[in-house]
Each structure stands twice: as structure tokens, then as C-alpha cells.
Picture 1 (cartoon, rainbow, N blue to C red):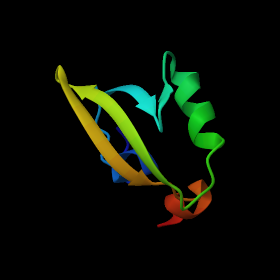
Picture 2: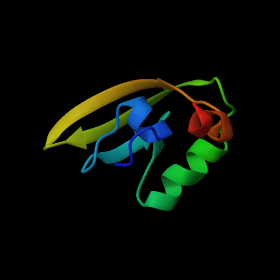
Picture 3: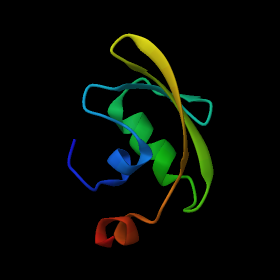
Picture 4: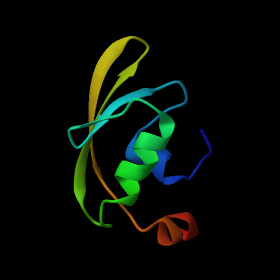
Length: 71
């Protein structure tokens, strides 16, 4: 995971497996990219995933990518 990225700020870590984003099933990496891209900045969202075999839920607020990278 690259330090300072929006994913890291959201609480994701290297090795995490994302199962769903706001109720949308994620089967491939591009599914997550599309789901995030179709969601407006400042939207509260939920990520369900696996970390070291344990189910986890992250409540996140999306940021504008350009602004997030500048921060």
C-alpha cells in the first residue's frame, strides 16, 4: 500500500480483499474502481472485506482524488 493514498486513509491495508462497496459485490479489481468512480466525493460509503481471513467493515467518506493526493 502506498502511503498517503485515499485507500490507505480509508483504512485499507496491503493484502485486504474487498468483497463489496456500498452493497455492490466486488469480483475483480476493476469492479471496485468502477464503483468508487461512480460515487460522488464526500459520500459516506461502506466497504466490506477480509483481512487475514477475518471479515471487516470500514465506513469511509470518499474524497476527490486530486485533492486527496495533494493533502
